Length: 256
Image 1 (tube, rainbow, N blue to C red):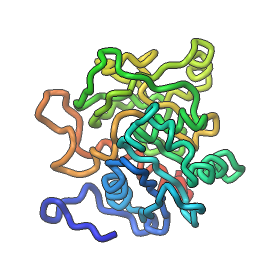
Image 2 (cartoon, rainbow, N blue to C red; image 1 turned 45 degrees about the horizontal axis):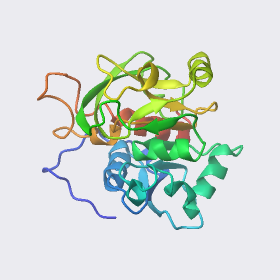
Image 3 (cartoon, rainbow, N blue to C red; image 1 turned 60 degrees about the horizontal axis):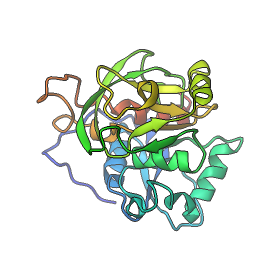
Image 4 (cartoon, rainbow, N blue to C red; image 1 turned 135 degrees about the vertical axis):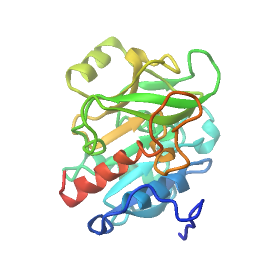
């Protein structure tokens, strides 16, 4: 895929050559919107994005996978419910649960897909106010020991865009208690809970920390001039989402 800078030569960081060998697969389903944004984030972080199609029968030699945001299969039946049965998903589920522990990141619709495929517990339902919401959102990094958060400090607050209609995370009390006690709440909303998610949870991980899902969109906060810095008074930086992508790249090359 060939990409041109959106504005001049604007880039977020100087990519480190040692990361370029890491290949991050980005899956496109019918209705996916943010696959190109996720690929761009991988490239800006220094890695090599690899296009994957939901109907593919093999993952290839990718080192990690991103399930991007959008409306897979039009969100028919329920967000992520049909995409969960795409041919490539069985390969991703097997690889994520294998001894190799393939790193998988689900963003928004990707997070919904991770719960539908039971790689992560709980479910996503409509926002408690029953409206689509789009805003810059402050998150606190609760766990920086996952494959996708190693470049953040524990307790660090970051601001990234959020846009969803089915973003309310729910689970039974036993599951929520387990997530809290096992340190699997990775991101939590700060200052404002935009969708009624239980215990202000914005993102969680599996027990091994290789699978992470979150509703807000870090791939939209990776480049100066295009992130949250700004207009609504929330603050933050344009590039605070980049850490998820550099984290997994550093993990792959053994720097984390």
